[in-house]
Amino acid sequence: MEKYRSEEIMNLSCKGYFKSMGYSEDELGHKPRIGIANSWNQLVPGHYNLRQVAEYVKRGIYAAGGVACEFGVMAACDGVAQGHIGMKYILPSREIVCNSVEIMVQAHQLDAVVLLASCDKIVPGMLMAAARLNVPAILVNGGPMLGGIFFDGRKSDGTSPDEAKGMLAAGKITQDELDNLIDACGPGCGSCSFFGTANTMCCVAEALGMSLTGCAVIPAVYAERLRCAYNSGMKIVELCKKDIKPRDIITEASVRNAIKCVMAVCGSTNAALHISAIALEAGLKDMNVMDAFDEISKTTPELAKINPASHWSLEDFYFAGGMPRVMQKLGDILDTSVMTVNGCTLGESLSKYKFIYPENKDLIRDRSNPYSETGGLAILRGNLAPKTAITKPGAYAPELRRFTGKAKVFDCEEDAETAILNGEIKPGNVVVIRYEGPKGGPGMREMYKAMKYLYGMGLNLSTALITDGRFSGTNNGCFVGHISPEAAEGGPIAIVEDGDEIYIDAIDGKLELKVSDEEIKRRLANWKKPEKEIPEGYLRLYAKVAASADKGAIIDL
Image 1 (cartoon, rainbow, N blue to C red):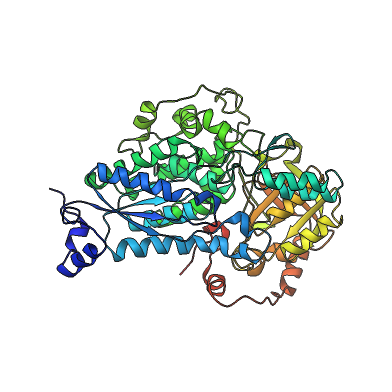
Image 2: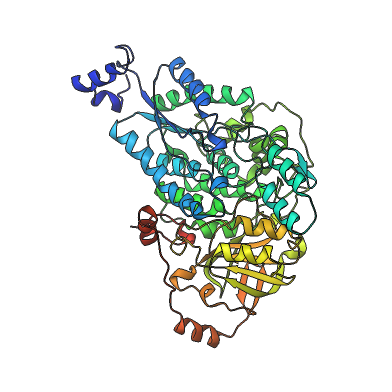
């Protein structure tokens, strides 16, 4: 008979506390006690349905002979936080999510945990916790939102109003059209209906083997989402009984699989931050994740394009077969011998998977006919990014993959946005936004609105934007983020001046400041970090202990 952690702490007082909440003698007997880490709230659309999802997980747990113990975990919405101080808290919140799950599981010695999340920092935070705790775990996401009213040639999403704001400023649309778009861009709850960080990380969870095969892109409002939750509840009890743990699943081979899948579907650049952090928590300290991204991007074909890289929505991607179809088409590029939460190898789970809908070879292509022979993301290095930077060539026009322009420099996001809307950015400019990195922001905000405004102003094909901050997965156009070292640590981006020539090469992986080495040395010698007031509280702590972007912006102690 299996011995469970929860039995070892079930002294008389502990038993009494559980009985005070209505647990029965039968539930407190020889059964695995399964935590449900539920990040439901009424602030995040992607998490709004997680109360219902949790109920179906509980049904599955009880049907399989376990005991469900639900607890809450914080979650913040990137979409609501965009463009103001709130975004400074979003990436740092990932560590709070991770620590919260760790504390609850360890304090109560739970035998296993089901992780309920859908959005940008919450999914990776929970996967980090699973890797750190190394008790049986499975992630269930709430599913993507359906696409909204058609706008600008595709189904709209929650970011469309910001593109439209730029169009309004350029006189392309009316205020009434913008107001109607705001009303109809989000028809129901779910993670954002584009392939941003939220849906990328749900796909990463599936590719890592930490979610059931097919789980990632089932729409939030579909009944299949609830069946998946029930099956996950059943499966966590099996994992507990078989003692299959996250570090049996999150290995160097599965991390490489996840990176390959990100490349194949042109996922969010933020995946580099989060996969780096997950790998570290899984004990893969000798694995250089950024080097793996660089290597894999050159050898993995891009097989799928989803909004913002194309007009196809997440619902379209689901109908086309989602991640199981992509992984099947990648074939021997993946290591299919790795273990998964299905209780079998990736190869076995893919061979058993039943596709409900027919193929869409215009959306998910065969390896013989890829969108590109190389991956959707690219790692850049050069005198502007001595460590690394990242870009997403799969989401912008081929002619922008090599871009040379004159710098327009801003020391914060807001100044750049004002300049864009005031018409100060011209074709041929490279917008430089600095002091927005993990330490300098602090918190490494997304330069989401700046890119949306460039798009709306009709400048997305004639300008570029580089930053030590991040980007939302919904951004397109020529952009480079995660520049390391960041400006606040004296990285070369700190000494760029208006009018400097900058060269971006997403094909050969270069980011160069066209200034002599002697001039760069002179400027760096004269550089002084500008004083910046940081709010008291968590941001001040994070600014002191955050690692650089190339290390996943983790808390580095």
